[in-house]
Length: 169
Image 1 (cartoon, rainbow, N blue to C red):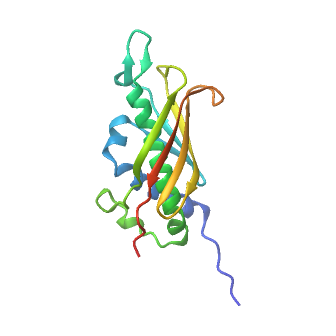
Image 2 (cartoon, rainbow, N blue to C red):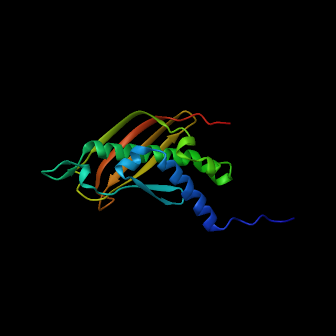
Image 3 (cartoon, rainbow, N blue to C red):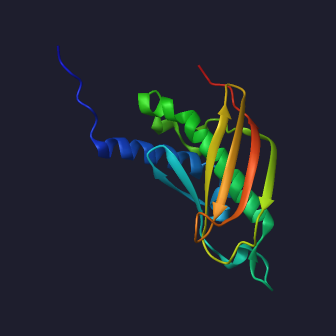
């Protein structure tokens, strides 16, 4: 009986990175804001690099509240989509050649999204991480936290509910 050799770790990393890149590059608004995602295994951290155009109140200066809300919502949607694709990606059922902006899987649809602004967003890079509280076939609930210099000092958090796309068979 022959034992199947595991794939080299570099092949696995390349497959995961390509899937994440295809998912993120398919949403123009993510590129517009400059949001990128750092991946460690199956965990994603959203990164919003600081840019002067993101300032809403130049007197403080503080990040625009709409930018903060968009950053949190994008992090929630991409995290949900990433978890949705994970099983297919790891099994090899996901064809990465077909994961282009034109053939992107449908993204979850926002039902509601509530943002708590805890303090002003400073003019520096921001980070966000989403936790999926519940993800079923039709519905998902997600909590997102955003921080800048210190993860323990959040500047915003949000809770969202989403309708999940139907799986294509």
